[in-house]
Image (cartoon, rainbow, N blue to C red; front, side):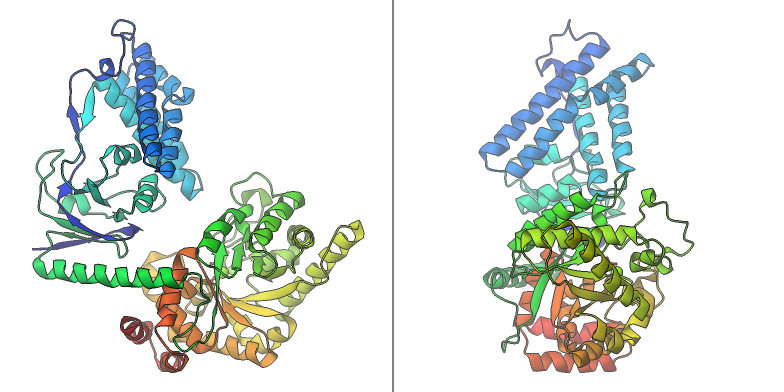
Length: 583
Ligand code: PEP
Ligand code: MG
């Protein structure tokens, strides 16, 4: 019987093969194998330092091997780990723990664990994911000390484990690791990044996986086959012939889709009958620009600038901000717009150094443009930086504010914009004549006021993430409200239709920059509703182009009409799904 376990998709593709469970096995030698002179290393402190150096040497050797294979990204990860192995903080803490009575192996593991926990506690997803790398390094040093090894797979296999050290992945001969299924981990952990760069399908955070799979021995390489779908997050234990056939069909369909996507990448997105739709990318920093351009983005529809303010002790200065905006503008040049959203601080994005008062309901609190009713300086500084950056980059700046809910909010934005320009002009620095000024429509009151707001603004950008949470009164971060968080709910779609009608009447464009724009089903419905522009994560752009290319404009308008007439999100998904499946 097949057991199905769901996890988080971490690297696309489908793999089917036998299970490999990485486990530690004993071997003679250990530290001595690594070239430790026994007598010199007899003292625990000496043994730890020598084992750390030996582990670093192993990691450097692995990195060198990968460099030769042109696997530079992985080599860099291992080089960083080689440095971690001899990091005085890690080694000194282990030595201290030995002095406090722990045996050297336990001390190294405990020291690495302490560093990993510090990293994991940071409010930074990427740094927190590095915790796994530190644990991996600690385990390697411990293995050298204890004289143990890990048995590698001896046939093309799917690794099943709680976590998989990236250095171990690098040690497996090419072709022997064909899939990864982890009960722990995260899509931003290095093992997931490695899997993506190696093209190995991976699913992480599949709770219940280890309980569901029962294999003998700690390092078994045999077992009934399993299947991993790194796009849906499905893991099938013991798939039967019907499931295997279905997986083969899925794989073939995706290969066709990927070929189509690659062929379309550098062409403007359009329906089968040639109706164009602008496709832009959402970014969080100037560094994201390269990925967006590689994905064929026609510009940036949402630069979430609040990320420049997070994880710092103080706000970025006007000079720092100018440099960041200028880099993004120059990366896209004068013909591809970069829409800069003024910092959307508040809600789920806290900035402790601003000293904002406690909010019992942060999503309904002083957030984004609402901050400027109290203190204007934060957004004024940002607007001056944007004017300056655009002056230096030689482009027309584009700005929008989040959480606009009244006409007064929109007018405040225009006032701040003009005040900031006057300040820059007074310094004699280059400053453009105008700034395209947009409003995010993500609060129901703004949608209702769309006809009036559209007469004030140059463009609208609909934030479907917040619009959905406010229309359906369902906290977007609460997993138990998942059934109320689908932006394809007709109540949300009818609201969007109102916004588009308001924009059309005033002759301004309406974009969508919430996650719905990046969902192929969502993109079809939105284009059918008359949206002019979609902005989504760079990784979603291929899927949108393929979805649009398979349908005509008339079919999309028909889909939108049916979606508006529906009364639940499931119906809308079914209608859009039928068009997608046909495409
Ligand atoms: C939105 O709300 O849809 C949006 C794009 O903004 P954010 O997700 O950053 O709140
Ligand atoms: Mg929002």
